Image (tube, rainbow, N blue to C red; front, side, top):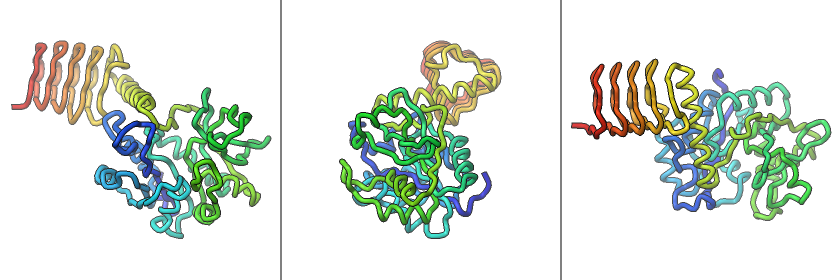
Length: 339
């Protein structure tokens, strides 16, 4: 997308993540070679927002250090008073001139740029003050439910802890991503109360405020529900890692790399793999590694920060780190470390 001078992004990254059972801030947990927050920032970068703001809180110093390489401004949520309160913390940075604000969470590492771009374009085309990203789940437990009218417009979002038995049967859920007109967003959040089971300012309450003012609340439904997976546990962390690994491997195979078992093959995003490389099960490639054309990597090979020139044959269960292997060489199963 081109430069969007009236477009800003807020990423909520202040939570502790109690279900992770960890002393580390949730958004700093690694999934496929990077903190999950980094995957979200990478996804929003192509949108070309004028400002990207990360709302931090728990372990904010550590989160801030992890973001040194990103063009992102930080604001601090001193107290964890809910998602709506977190967005309000970003108001001084966003300012009054921004037309549209996209809000998303830092624990959704599977979200893709294409979906965010499509949602933003839909929001602009429909002209309403608020668009909500939704999806349909077989098991919607723990997610806010989308309450819609017969015309498919969103009436409200009911959080799991506040939902009735009937509402819990609804399978369309809130993906936690919004496009909102800035004036409406901040004015509405200042009206939101804390009359709920958590005693917090829910961002989702702006939907009911919009409908009360006769505004049309639109939705953008993501067809692939896995894309909006929120990582709240180690189980979900593993699921997200698996999906990102398979996305990477599918792309490499489409580009001419043979993998006999992509489910057990892990290749970091920055690794370069040449044409007609053959990769056996259990191979791991990481760091700034480069694998030249026609190389063969047998079972269980681990390579970190290495350059393999063309036609290199690496025998099973070899470990290579910080080395250059010349063209046509064969590496018999052993460890090769930097000199």
